[in-house]
Amino acid sequence: MKIHGSVALVTGANRGLGRAFARELADRGAAKVYGAARDAGSVTDPDVIPVELDITDLEGVAQVAEQCGDVTLLVNNAGIMKASTLVGAPDLDAARQEMETNFFGTLGMCRAFAPVLRANGGGAIVNMLSVSSFYTNPFVASYGASKAAAWSLTNGIRVELHHQGTLVVAVHAGFIDTDMTAGLDVPKISPEEVARQTFDAVEAGEVEVLADERSRTIKSQLSNDQELIYPPIQEFWDSLVNPS
Image 1 (spheres, rainbow, N blue to C red):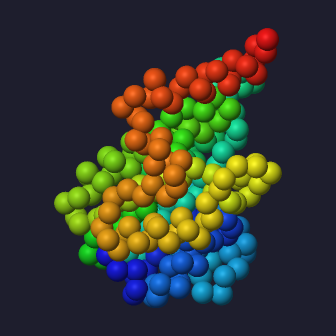
Image 2 (cartoon, rainbow, N blue to C red; image 1 turned 90 degrees about the vertical axis):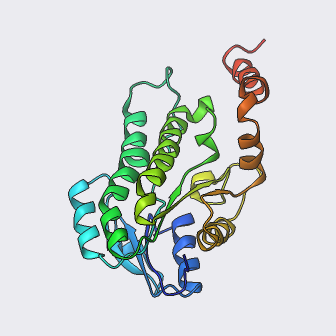
Image 3 (cartoon, rainbow, N blue to C red; image 1 turned 45 degrees about the horizontal axis):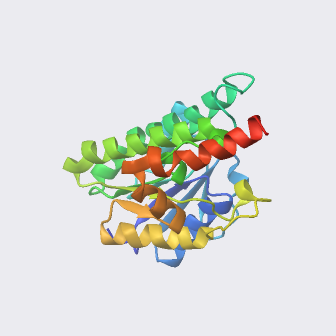
């Protein structure tokens, strides 16, 4: 689909990658860009229409879907990371919050806007996932589980909505230069570059974006993950929990 003339809604549009998504859409000539955030006042781009939305509130999601009934492109960007292990975490709170937002929140948005997109000719859904969709890092293990679930969700939604002509795009990236990775001394991709690649894919009708070298490498190793991906992770983890 063409971005020029489209009507888009971006969740988590108040900062970081969400703000870059909204800006890129406006720069490409979208007719209207809704920027959704829990605090609508934090969406400050003059070319973006602020919308108050908590994607874990299904009643609120339904209201926004009705309010924004002209949407042709949904960008599910909102997400959280609690940096929690699985067994060692003090409780299940982090895992529940991540699953509630990253999986159920995304699913709720897809369910609410699927009829809107159908009524408007099919359109497209973009789900912002992660390289953590592909493997488990024990330091952020529950986050990875939620993103793996969201990856599966994305593939399922794509199949389910094919009949109505809705393109469903999965976007994977490693470290993006946003607040979430502040303080990490690692190679990072800019949010603007992720946004550019994402909407290039939407316009080309592509279903997957592997935005950086890390995501491309990890995806290529999935068929041999137990030989290529997990041994170095295991070695590093063991060196921390049981140093010699």
